[in-house]
Amino acid sequence: MLSGGKIKVFFEKAGLWRPKHIHKVVNINSLYKIFKESLSINFVSKKTVANLTRYIFLLFPNCKIYLLTGLVVLLSAFQPLNESKMYVKTVVIDAGHGGTDPGCTYGGVYEKDINLKIALELGRMIQEKMKDVKVIYTRSTDVFVELHKRPEIAHRNNANVFISIHCNANENHAAKGTETYVMGVNKSAANLKVAMAENAVIKLEDNYLEKYDGFDPNSPEAYIIFSLYQDAFQDQSLLLASKIEEHFKKTASRLSKGVKQAGFLVLWKNSMPSVLIETGFLSNQEEREYLSSKEGQLQTATAIFNAFEEYRLEVEE
Image 1 (cartoon, rainbow, N blue to C red):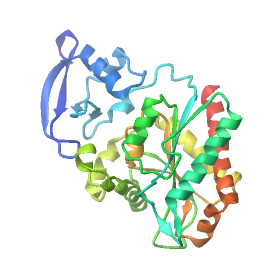
Image 2 (image 1 turned 45 degrees about the vertical axis):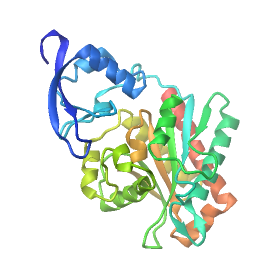
Image 3 (image 1 turned 30 degrees about the vertical axis):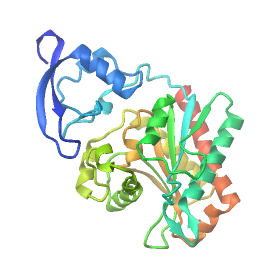
């Protein structure tokens, strides 16, 4: 902390994955303004920013700010204002893949189609049973939506929860079960493999290296930065993820592989509780047939809805 309410920060000039640090002194009032505008959410206070002066920051060309190696990432240092009381008024449901990106494909079944059917069924349940909750879809038809645009949709609509729906796949066709991920450390090679598979979609986008600050979805080294990332809403994300896995077991009688953490780009820049659900393995014939059936899709959506309903009651009480 320097005199006059100023702090020293590091400005990123070469992209997230190729840092080149230039320090500069900035006024804390300006920093507060940048936080507010770049994150587009109302949980930053000047007092909070002042308490962060022992940290080193990176400022990216697109004015997004993150913390540097070995410390904590920016959002983890913030706490939502009035965090004891949260309200869930808008949920964004993200059907993974779509359009020219089919996702994993087995036995003539396309992941993108399963994701969309479950997403639409979940949204229908919420709209029918929770009249005061607004449902936003990142896609409601078979179209390709760039990965970075999905969290942007959530931010633009001031979403309180982000739910991304996917199907899994494995070279071992006996692999089965559900998994729900939150943003965090790839704690195993299997988690990293899942994240790499889901993030690979960015290669379908034009200028993806520029859009994602030089991130290579096939490089294990690129995921090191994710080991530093902890969501400001990590506790709420974990709470929702836990309830989803509980209801996969209780409501749908599914094998749950539990709550996990990995570096998913679609979760990375979300400023709200966020989860990515792997509803089962399309590489497993039994699960593929289940997820392709109306009954399986209804049970899966019902399990997620029940978890969402419990989560909302708990955080709003």
